Length: 83
Image 1 (cartoon, helix red, strand yellow):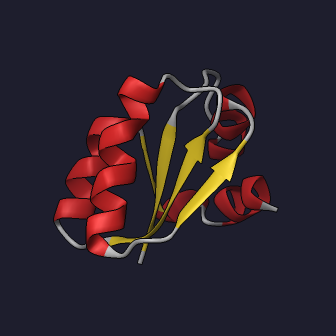
Image 2 (image 1 turned 90 degrees about the vertical axis):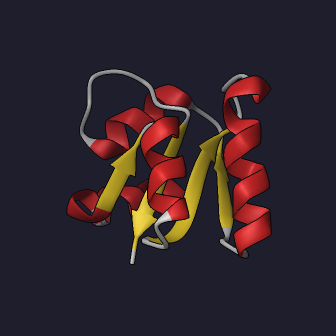
């Protein structure tokens, strides 16, 4: 379900942790998707900020599949779905 949500929002997504954090701080994010197999040190800032801002967090199993859902050839730890 979550991979499909990312794929459907293809033009309305932000890929990568740094860009996700930036978009969240700017108030442009509806929800965040975090891959469970990503290193906690990479995803912890996104989780914390999402909690502080009340942004829903969707968890998926695989960085590789999340990257594929975004239309890229590499995995990604986080994706933001824009408003």
